[in-house]
Structures are given as structure tokens and as C-alpha cells.
Length: 84
Image (cartoon, rainbow, N blue to C red; front, side, top):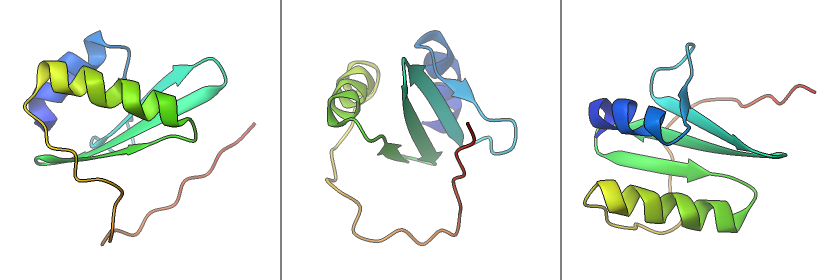
């Protein structure tokens, strides 16, 4: 999914981070949506629930997806720093 999303995501307004090729962002006004893509798993992050729902709908239109619900465990170590 990661390679395919790179092409499709760009066409949907997502931008791939240069610092991490598995992270994509999309800005909608004052809101930001982050997609963390790892092989065939995707974590959607946003403070706006409606943006998460819309992202799921758009992903479902392009890919065969299964909604795993809220993450139960994330075996990653990362930090997100907002500036501005």
C-alpha cells in the first residue's frame, strides 16, 4: 500500500514528509491530518474526527481496507512537534 499510496495520496492532496517517507500530511484550513503508512497498515491521526472519517472513505474508494478501530498498541517511538 505504501508505494501505491505515494502516487494516489499525492493526487488527493497529501504530501510525503522528506524526513520520514512513511508519513503523509494534508492540511485543511487550521486542521492537519497525518497518515502513518507501514507496509499494509495505516494509522490516521487528526484532532478532527470528521476528517478521519473522510480520510477512511477516500482510502476505501482507492484500496480494499479494514477498519481496525482505535490503536490498541503502537510499538513505535516517535515525537510530533508542532511549531507555530
